[in-house]
Amino acid sequence: MIRTLIIVIIVLAYLILGIPVLLIEWVIGKFNPRAKDYSCLRLVQAAFKLIMFAAGTKLTVIGEENVPKDQAVLYVGNHRSYFDVIMTYARCPRLTGYIAKVEMLRYPLLRDWMKALYCLFLDRDDIKAGLKTILQGIEYIKNGISICIFPEGTRNHSDVMLPFKEGSMKMAEKTNCPIIPMAITNSAEIFENHIPFVRRCHVILEYGKPILPGELSKEEKKFLGAYTQQKIQEMLDKNKSLLRIE
Image (cartoon, rainbow, N blue to C red; front, side, top):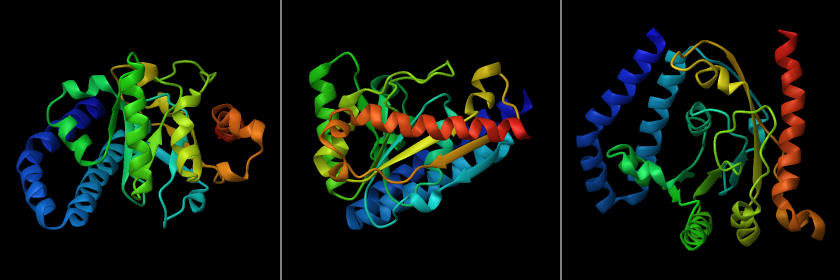
């Protein structure tokens, strides 16, 4: 319970103390938008690293060399925990917006930071609004901003991944940007498997080799979500065995 309380205090302190910081960042953005963007990125990454430290998570990262540093990409991962966002965002080398559910707009301050970080808010019940979100993501990628999405559509409480939503892959198809598959193993053990307690555990985060839509066969392109999901599943199967060895 102590770890949980510490993390709650960190989050609340960051949001409250971040009010004047957001105002300062807004002013900086009027004169130097790029400086403002990267300042926001590094501030949030520092906070997320502190949260992971407070959680006591041992994080093993595999394949980080597969993430391009010089171009925007579409990160695609499985989703078991709130901490998936925290641990992956803390490692993004460049500007990256995450696709979040539209309900996140209910939370003041948090939504302001998310908007500053180019996050997009997806209404899963409104097809037209969902299409606009995908189109905005395409524009971001064209402008050099990476996007991260968890195509299962929600946090999955099962060991079996939910089918990936093919529509979410349109951002890569339309921009021909690399898809970086992310396999996150054991993250639910941080919090979700024993709510409300945050516990020490070992998590493996693996970045797979980039998937280039332009180099795939017609059939693979048609079912790009399923193709990417298969690559992630292969990494998950391998890394579960690594945890069992411990």
